[in-house]
Image (cartoon, rainbow, N blue to C red; front, top):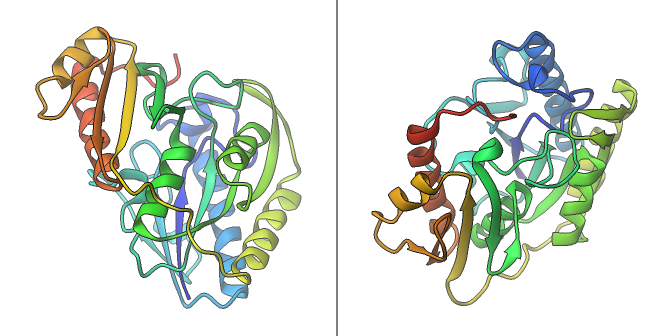
Length: 276
């Protein structure tokens, strides 16, 4: 059994603030250790379920958060950037299941460290008219590749967002949001034990990925900066809905990869910190 783990950081056990998840933050070194521990709990669960091949993609920020020596020896790590498929780099049709560790809710939600990919630079996103963030786009892209998402871990808001997309996905709440930078924390051993148990149990039941739209999908993004939107209009196939919303049509996962190009263009124009 081949398992793919996409590991973000904002939804990791115990983390609540930008200083926990950004390199140079006063608690970042502790945060990256907690990230590795949540991932290792998922790896242990996968091993218990019979996984013989486990890939972990470090999917947060600089994508160099997990120290290789801190990762469970049963897993292989994809680390660094650029990555053409970003948070899903290395996901293949041959994978039997995908696990999302440490995910967070989309921009505008009250969830801990909520945002959509680029902090305040992205104000809203829609996939086929449906509000979407990192959870929804990852789920839809994985389905297009042919891999079911089986488990997601994060705060209660992230877990609720996942359930709205696909109620069959097992969710593990590791903290409950009080606001964007505060939460009621579950004890570390309890939370990581729940991750391990959920992964082991979920992977023991085979699932098929959600249905993929037969035609092209439409991805629309409202940017904080009109200059980002106007610059993106130079990319073939990108159209505008107003001065800050651009959209494009295409089949997933190619559309997801195109969005990664949009983010690289936006980063070159803004250079803003992600949690302002």
